[in-house]
Image (cartoon, rainbow, N blue to C red; front, side, top):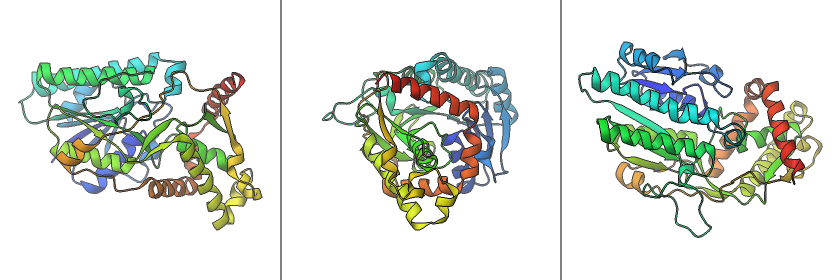
Length: 368
């Protein structure tokens, strides 16, 4: 029976993975390690009981060693990371500490328990990374493949690139059994409302501006979080040790197209449910107006990558992966979740976070 340690298991992707794994493999043992910083939230795990939770820092190597030993862990799935590019521009130190030093701490603990003191039994250190490590594509460039040269352009992507390299080094130097996945933009339930889709849904509901960087034509590939979890599952089951796999959603869209889908989706929801107007009286849709009137263009983000696109042939041909959801289907499910879980996002968006967002975007607006 596999025993998993899931780092960052109270965050967005980590919590969705816990839910996915718990449903598919109910007999497996799950140990969650999360520092519960601003985006970690125990409410993301509500309704689940079959796991052990430890609040702690992945940089605490001795703590990780104890967890691996005491719970006989044979698989680490490493989600814990600082991941918001805007925050990395304003404060890069936390990204270097968590994403690079934290990953190294986990690798040291895994090597100590599984290799230096262990029996040599099969194990796996699976590292979750991002397509942002590959840099930016031109409009006609081929999508990122696993052999694309790294060219990170933000403190966030640079810190993730460094963590990818050190995972690779621990496999090739010490024989640690590792795999890595580089994913595209995730969306879905429980996503902290600093990322585009949840932030703009909530802003439409509360009548706040929809701040669009530059011309809004930056292109991303959109991956529903449950499809991402399925991809990780396949890599853990059948992936080749030491290999990297790109996981994409097959939905390459400019930001303005995503924003238009959000506005149209919210407006349609209000048309079909009269209760929404009473619940969200500040929404333009509550007054029969279009949510698109909230759109406002602000100064572009520093070093803003123009386009990401994923070539996922390797994981598809080797492991049989393909995304189950189209973007249209996944977005409608996500919108429905945020409409049904107002208590969750209102509690998540506390005053300190809203103050940070207001300061960040107002400063950018003054520079336009």
